[in-house]
Amino acid sequence: MDARALIDSRPRLALATATTLLSLALFAVLLAFAAPADAAYTYSFKFGAPGAGDGQFTYPSGLAIGQDGRVYVTDPGNPRVQVFAADGTYLSKWGAGGSGPSLFSAPWAVATAPDGSVYVSDIGNNYVEQFDAAGAYLRMWGSPGAGAGQFSSAYGISVDGAGSVYTAEIANPRVQRFSSTGSFLSLWGSMGDENGQFNAPWACAADALGNVYVLDIALARVQKFSSTGAFIVGWGGQGPAPAQFSSPMGLAVDPDGNVYVADVGNNRVQKFTSSGVWVTSIGAPGPGDGQFEAAGALAVDPSYRVYVADFAKDAIQVFTDPTAGLPVIATVTPTSGKRKAKVTITGAVFGQVRGAGYVKFGSKKVTSYTSWSSTSIVCKVPKTAAYGKVKVRVVTPGGTSSAKRFTITR
Image (cartoon, rainbow, N blue to C red; front, side, top):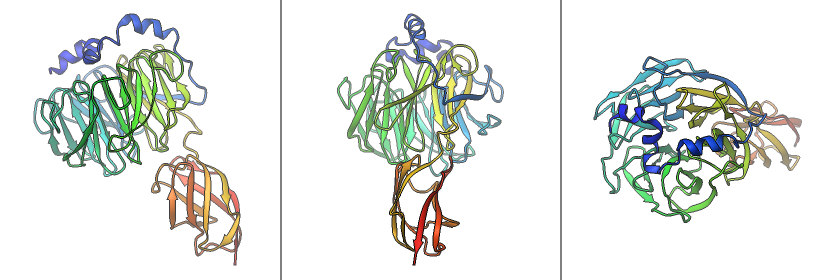
């Protein structure tokens, strides 16, 4: 596939294998009914402009954010990957047109791994390339076809917390799972509209626990699977109402497992819980800041900022909810106990897995955890914590919770 031809016929070719969902007639009708922006999320800033220079884009199609906050953007019109700081400052780029190591035909989707690796799915060459965080080539795998480990228009790519790589393909309606080094592990999916089936799987996103979300642009729905492909839940449908979609193209998961979907037809981003319960909408149709003309790829950074690529504006817009990443403690049970006693902390926004955050009893950090989820932490009172009343707090990259009282007894 020639990348320039791809860009020059944007709406038609980008959705060619997903029928004509992005037709101008549907687009115009649904814009009038798009849900309003939610007040909790505010527009913060944008970066990028049309062009081929550093920091410019021609159809930014993929977004991913590393653990250090660096933003990776695939730019198929200028076949390359560009790297930005969290504030949108241009840092570097790599790639050129062609076929082979560090070369791209149409680099569409990008994903980052816990070890810093960057994976790029090239829908023109039908392969995946792996790079380190600085853009040094590591390896590649895949070839055109329908066999295991082959690809036909893999528009989606994602990496879970264990480093497994997932791809979603339009022409082969399925998801494939690979090791971090490209070894084929499994696949699932077939053509259809039943649970576990796909019509045009456009994007995928994996969370820290290994759940995999797949966005079907033709069926306008999201499906959630286990890491091995067991269907868990699905939601969506065609329309402009909350929890409905029109030509959904962007999918992302935040550190707490919330799911974000961007759809071009409604030009908004919708936020859901991990089980598909609608939470809020972000953005609105229009040419101004905080508005979308073609909301496509999106990503959420470790600080819960939402980055949205608009391929009509050739720019990235960033939205912030000041309360989105702030952990909240509801209860500490029991309310008193000895050193090394087991304590259960309930609340919200703790993060899905232990690692990025921690618990403090007074000035002492907890070192022993029995379990950790976004809503519950089971841990032990530090053996060196001071006796008497202390303040218990949960600390995450999103901030520090308010304190709850706990009494440490002898």
